[in-house]
Structure formats: C-alpha cells, structure tokens
Image 1 (tube, rainbow, N blue to C red):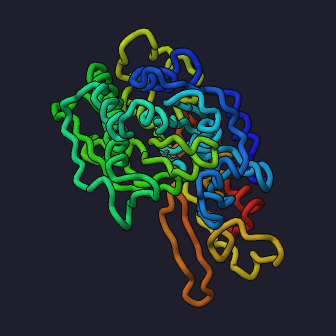
Image 2: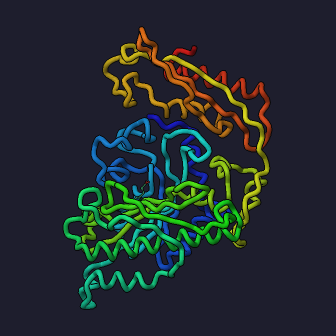
Image 3: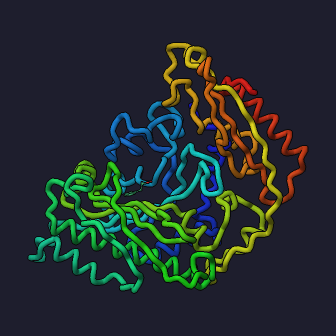
Length: 422
Ligand code: PHE
C-alpha cells in the first residue's frame, strides 16, 4: 500500500540487538535498572491494526491510523508505530510481573536531525496480582508501597506539581481505588526516575552535553493523555536550556488487562524512544548516524566500557536547495471514488514530500523544511516552498551530485503527487 521497499529493507537491521551498537548499549543500560523484568527483543514488526490500535482503545477515527502517518501493508496490517502494539499479547502470556519490549517502530513523519521513519522504542510494564495480596492478608496498595521502598533512592530534584489524579483531564479508572492508583503511580515514577538518573550519571561520566554542564540534573512530571493509560504522565528532562520529553507512561487501562485474560492484574506501563536517550547519553548529533555502517561511527561504542562522548568524524558541508510548487486544486485532485490519503482538501500531505525525499536521496537528506506558503488571491491555489538540506554523513557531496538528486526529487514530486513546479 504505502510502504516503500526502502522502509521494508530496514526490518532485518535490528539495530537494538547489534553488539556494541549505541542503541544496544542504551537498551542494556536501561534493562539493568529493572532486575527480574522479562525482556523481549525480537518481536516481529508487522502487526495487525487490532494489535497496534484497537487493542489499545484507539478510537476508529484517531489520526494515528491515517495513511499519512502509518505504513500499511494491507487494510488490516501495518508496521507497528509503537511497542505498545505488543502490550495486550504480552499481558496475555502472563509470564512475569514485569516486562520490557525493545523494538524497531515505523512512522511517516518529518525529516530532520531527530526524526527518522524507523526508530526504536522500549516498552515497559509492571503489574501486580490482586489475589496474591489477598493471600498475604494485605491490601494491594500495601504490597505496592513495600515494592516502592526497594527501588534505589536518588537525590535529583524532581518537580511534580500536579495531583496524581485529575478528575477530568487525568481520571481514576472505575474499579481502581485512589490508594491503589497513588501506590502504582509512586512505583512507576520512582522506577523511571531511577532510569533517568542512571542514564544521566553515565552521560556525566562520558562528559557529554547532558553531563558536562555544571548544572544539576532536573526532571519533571507532566500530565499526559494516551488512549491506553489513565491517569497518564510524561517525564521531561531539562537539557541544553529546554524541557525535553523522554517518555510517556501511565496506569494501564483495566480493559486491556481484562481483555487479555488477566483481570486480576493491575499496574503501569511506559514507552520511551531509545534514539533520543542514546543521543543524550553519547552526544550523537544526527539520528541518521545510528544507521551508519562506517567504522568511524561504530568503533566508538563498546558495551564493556563506560560511555565516551561521540567524536564526530565529519561535518561535511551542507548544500541547500529549494523547490516550489503549486498544489493540485481540490477539483483536479478528486477523481471521485478513491478515498483521500490526507486530511487536507487538495489531498496533499507534507509527509508525502518527506517520503519522496527519503526515497530519492536516502540518508543524504538531512532536513526538509517548509519555508514559504502562499495562496493566490484570485485562483485560491496554494503554493509551497520546501528547503532541502543535502549533506552526506561520510563524505563531501559534490554540487553535481546534489543537483542530480534535487532534479530527481523535483521529478518525483510531479510524478507521484501531481504538483506543478514553479
Ligand atoms: N506508546 C506511546 C508512544 O509511542 C508511549 C506510551 C507507552 C505511553 C506506554 C504510555 C504507556 O507515544
């Protein structure tokens, strides 16, 4: 359907399992903070829309389901967009109280130094069996608080200004008591703070940007929304002058556990992006580098040694080229029967431009940015201008090469999107 072969060819790479790859080392560092959790690192990326969306309570009209955001293989089969696609199946196995799933995930998205259509996530979950608490003659909340006490303590400043539960925005679930939710939330937050502190201490000893600053680490919890957790929170880290979101989390919707045949369980889940954490840990400046097979990149990472700050082996010159085009008008775009692939009236979606750039230029394209937009006052036609930054990661690109790529890019925009170049 809308899945190019270049995307499919990423499937066998399994970067998060390659020995001494920075994503593998980052994964292992996080896993080491969750002793006893069962790890899954080889779950297959092709899943059903049921696994990726329905099982998690995504409404039928959720934007995440759209062809502009998600790679479809057929009507009911997609490349997973997040590791949460495996939550329900893993709960159903009922093998362990805690589990961690690391995997490649796939999303149609913008192109820049922190976005790549294939990236890696880690999902974690911890649940408790209500029946065991009962057998021990304790309340569930008591048992959970005892577990909270076992999580290593840290001294990092954490800001958590919101109440655990917000009646409208972040509600308690039916069947969960406020006591239980507070206990689960405390276990979730303390566990994830411990991970972030461990990563930043490692980064500090690597004296990366994350660690070299004299400033102490600052983290904060903010309210969030996910269809599959409630209440939900995101954890943010103050990094280079900005708050950076590092993970999403929350109390697992009981319906997911019930549908998975483990209605006696309650607990939490989180999902984090491994690239983002590895970029902080090592000071890796561009997400394309993770895919590099150049030994100047790969030889810099050793699982057995404490992390060292990444030393860029190049900053080859950037080459900017613009392309401007008129979008098809709604009438010429229609054709009637075919369902629109996008939310906009002219059937145009920016992610299509991004994908063509990746298809034509591979990893030579660093960034594609909308720089101008214009609606003709008489005809109402819309014109856009994109600026493409061509930069090879491993050598200098000649102007002829950049021109040739840009010409092919322009041609494909016309052929595939039916736009009119200006
Ligand atoms: N799957 C979510 C995402 O990709 C993250 C998440 C996982 C949030 C588990 C809550 C619980 O953004």
